[in-house]
Image (tube, rainbow, N blue to C red; front, side):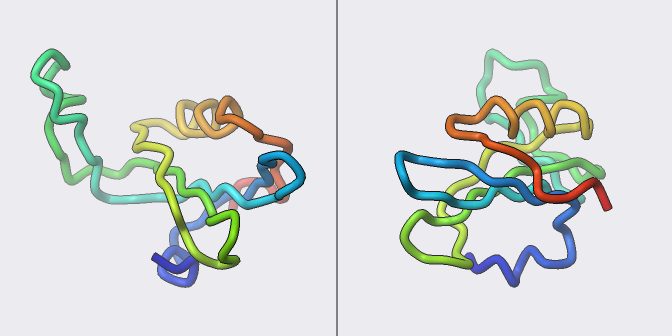
Length: 98
């Protein structure tokens, strides 16, 4: 997926590092919460839901403007921010929440 596909949903952009390489992390809005599908989880986490939520995407290390991985879906902005900031290599946010 290209970053252009996320453009309208990005509310915050940050920088991560892997060794000497730098890449971006994107905090986005979504109206679809992707469940875990884990039968041991409660239904509100296990099942997919059509609700307003937040998700995290990571830019590819080798291909600028291309998304290579997701960082999960979160029901609150606070959870999403914490997850991004606790991801490996997180350095800083480049902007405030839009």
